[in-house]
Length: 139
Ligand code: THU
Image 1 (tube, rainbow, N blue to C red):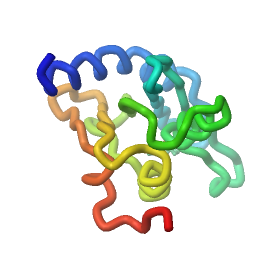
Image 2 (cartoon, rainbow, N blue to C red):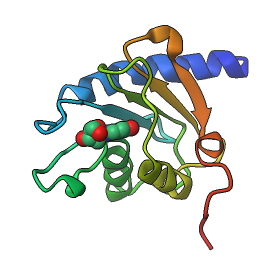
Image 3 (cartoon, rainbow, N blue to C red):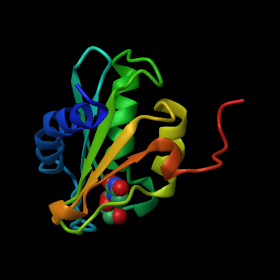
């Protein structure tokens, strides 16, 4: 399988899971659902959705929900194959700065992070390194 076929296969496996995760979002304050799906080294899919709070700063994004859930399930940092992030209310979702910093800690630098909105043609497959170049990394 060529690298691009491999990427496409990861994307197709994870997109329905990210869509399903977005349907579980708790987002009464923004009405902006987001879903994430993370593929473990063993091929298990871990979902995450955004979980908001009336004290707005306590909100957790979909990406961090998926990553923190994975760690709590015993998955090892930087062992993941790919992540898909899906947000139906924008043409293309772009992860926030906080999530990018958490990705740097928990995903490998070259891990693909597919970002998808309602415009399928705008879909991007950024790597973690592209999302946060020059990041403050583990010391
Ligand atoms: N949000 C995510 O879950 N992921 C992103 O990549 C961007 C933003 C959430 C946070 C908040 O619940 C809502 O989307 C609006 O910002």
